[in-house]
Length: 614
Image 1 (tube, helix red, strand yellow):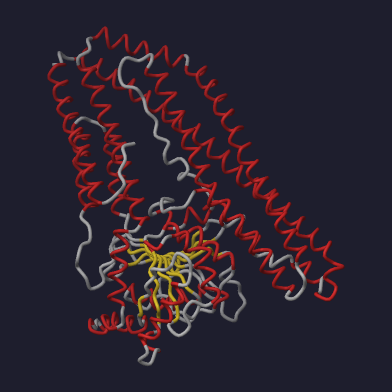
Image 2 (cartoon, one colour):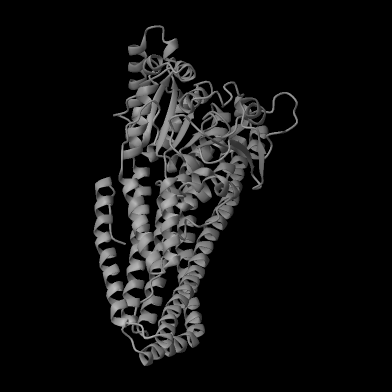
């Protein structure tokens, strides 16, 4: 967590879970469960990197970079970058590696640069040399020690909200949904401009107030009118539906930065930054994104524990088998494997049927959405009576399209993911029942719950440290992350059908209306084709991945189970192993792990997660 000049620890539960995983590792090591021990180690490492994710948004000249520099405790980000060339900066608190900075390009390549303000200034803005040095850059990633900020914390400094629409879409779909805390930086002298209000209404309402901090920057410019500035900002914020409880914090990022440079605690307090840090800490513990990630970790731990319990139970039973019984079990396994090819063919047919059903459902929904949207746009065009034609074509039409597409993604993205999850469950249950019906011991279960998170969506998603440090668990559907940029952005950046803008003027609008109508229809048809292709492609890719993982995991479990039987048979043939003593040891270990299940539930419940058994 963030602990700038504050040593208070807000939660010990992640540490408790890490200690719990260490105990599980020890049990696995004692009983030669190397695969499970490695899985526990991986989960423990993920917990260590499950630190705070802070996204800073706001319009240019609101002091975002100065605020971030104050939080980081170093003059690192350029404070005078021009709006048209700014980049997204990802800063990762890292004390375990050498200080480094990397340029991430849209094609997936990475270039190391010096982690200095001068270097970042060059790569954040082209300057006047027109060399195109920033062309194709998706962002700049920095790893460095940050005074008072815990290991793994990610701070994202985004371009201004009044920047290119593509960047705004990235902020909407890639960063805000997965942030623990979203800091919205407003100007104390001009709070909640029209463009800011639009962003708040269109984007942050979906994020939820439980993770948003409104910062009113430039307290040092209010000339003693701090109360009036706060009151004006509060009134404007609370006039927005669903923001009736919003309470902005008045700060001076510049004074906070100076306080960090001079180690001036009094100035740090008076700047308002100390209060901001406390609010960040509070939200990081109570916010919905943190709860979702914590819940995911607890479920992963429970699945791992159940796997260990299953293995211990199987081994304790196998320890009591005599040689003939073990050989009979192995023979049954071989017969089952001989019929595995036929079972896979049946499985393929079942998966294909589900693929057709889901794609038909999605296609019908997309078709209906575009038919309805086309009808609405035609009515808008027909009822337009003149006036500001440029605004109608460049703002009203694209905004309508954007809202409808965003609405569809937000409404149906979760539903599609839910149906994909059900398919994964059905494959798991079907294979488990098929196997368990023939084999006397442990049934095999398959965990496919993370299949959608495993999707290689785009190059940017793979390099983004927000993804690497926790993936998509912060309240956004995988489909929204996939389609948020590629689909919505081109629509927004059409600039309202520029070809039409050149050929139609207000004075002859009525005569040219059919031309405008035809152009809008043509654009919508192209968008519909691409939208359907991308969405159905996502569905197909996920189903293929689910099917592949089902087969791979089942093969892996079958190999593991066979190896257990063969290992026990070898022990019996080589020595007079005391099967009853080994079975007792394994039963004791199983009892210990079952008690650990209760401890895990307590840890999860005390943290406040809505814990459910998987």
